Image (cartoon, rainbow, N blue to C red):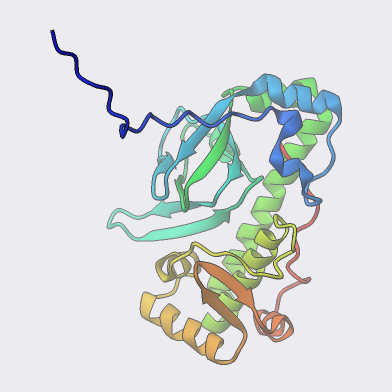
Length: 261
């Protein structure tokens, strides 16, 4: 009986990515993150369930979801948001590698906001009771969670200041500097060759409470003044001092050294 010859052109399914152990986490090589003890790494490893990957545009946490675990963003970008009944969206914060996600839900019955992947992204997934275990088994790690939560609140406070008091130019200047500095802290070259910038103008408008038309006009105005350039999906700051004066930031926008869960 004739047999079907093998198809040499057939593509084998891609093997799943190998999950790194916490003691070999690629984020720990960055000076941005504090050096943990071996006991703290073992504790985090014991609570980690798996890694979860999403494509750009997919949802990690739905608004109102009651069963979401805790996550650390391992690679890629994401954002937290709330929507109104008519579909209008307010982006609360943009998430970069190392950010801890889901604490707010643990303080209530359901997620008060959603989280979407802005780019292809990978997340470390932790047990749902990880928050309590970290506090119970390591006071230092418990404090780290408190620090991360307070730091995220401070970033939301700055966004509120922008939406409430800054002009359109000041809002966009502030966002560009803060996101540039955060992304640059995750690069070996500290942003000398630019940083990834996957935001569309709609994301910027939704994050700053501006119309899309106003966002477009203001972005072009700042670029014509030689303050920044966005090209090939990357952001380049061309006149940081002028942009910082325009943004009226407290400090230089550089993120402080922080713990990593």
